[in-house]
Amino acid sequence: MELDLIKGMFETALTIRRFEEAAIDQYRQGRIYGYLHPYLGEEAIATGVISALRPDDYIVSTHRGHGHAIAKGHDIKLMLAELMGKESGYCHGRGGSMHVANLAQNNLGANGIVGGGIPLATGAGLAVKYKGGDQVVICFFGDGAINQGVFHESINLAAIYKLPVIFVVENNHYAVSTRIQDSTLIPNLSQRADGFGIPGISLDGNDAVVIHEEMVKVVARTRQVQGPTLVECKTYRHGGHHINDPGAYMPEEEMKYWKSKDPVLVLRKRLADEGVAEHELKEIEQRVEAKIEEAVAFAINSPEPSKEAFLAEISVL
Ligand SMILES: Cc1ncc(C[n+]2csc(CCOP(=O)(O)OP(=O)(O)O)c2C)c(N)n1
Ligand SMILES: [Mg+2]
View 1 (cartoon, rainbow, N blue to C red):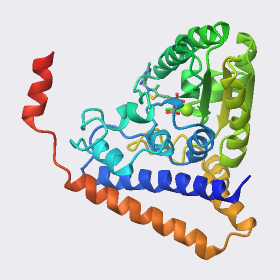
View 2 (cartoon, rainbow, N blue to C red; view 1 turned 90 degrees about the horizontal axis):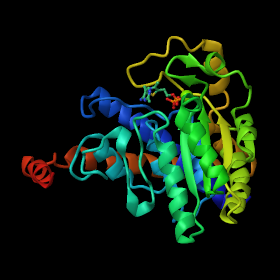
View 3 (cartoon, protein in one colour; view 1 turned 60 degrees about the vertical axis):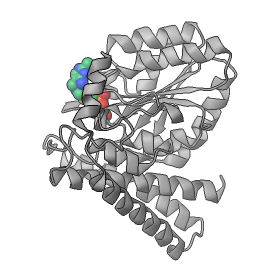
View 4 (cartoon, rainbow, N blue to C red; view 1 turned 180 degrees about the vertical axis):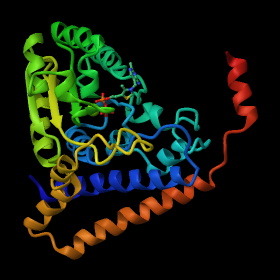
């Protein structure tokens, strides 16, 4: 794989990491309300999957979706402003963390309903096929959604209609505090694909390069209208389910193991091993820091939505 591509992936994964840290910081300072589900530890999935796409391909995101939007090329200034409920945010502050959508970049939106994006992605796939397009739709969802009825109904429809949807299950081994072993007995969630007569693969969800390489093949097959694939990426949250969950149920040893496979560090090490000089890696890191600082200042200084704007929306209803 080209070194520049890996450098780009490192910058994307690091931007996600720093964005989430900044969001946590701003939340603690009282500038972000409600829930916040950090993508810390899972950065390789959004990075590896979306780097295999064309800009006109679609994504459907989840409640843990900041990383998907950032990897899709969204402006982190507008992302952070959205999280702070500001008028300058992607949804004018009306959506917040769990509802970032940006149709201009074919992000069909995050979703607070577990599994809620799965039928939407299937519908988007049907629309692409109906119009004769060759885009693919990436449907991100968590391991907690794999036993929702809507997963089975949607994926079966996508299979029989040969829809261009790639179902990417982000298996971080927990649905809130429920361990995957306690909800699902198969060792690889991609085995579920057999039941629908479609291909399924399970990947190291902490290695963006592996994910990218596999996704390039899956995307190519999907574009040739050969129907959906179920891709499992195994990963781990670097914390509790949401910002106010200390995650006390996550065993220390387990956390230690997964942190030793930190997806951002995996990319950094790969670049260093390929001979990229330390100063070049530092330059990337400094560029990311500067972008984050700029985004924080932009979001803080952006105005709240006005009462008039809200009332105008209500009068439309
Ligand atoms: C239909 C539905 N049921 C329950 C919830 C409450 N809830 C929010 S996130 C979550 C766990 C989701 O786990 P998973 O799908 O594995 O995603 P992760 O949070 O691990 O990324 C639950 C049960 C919800 N939002 N929607
Ligand atoms: Mg999960």
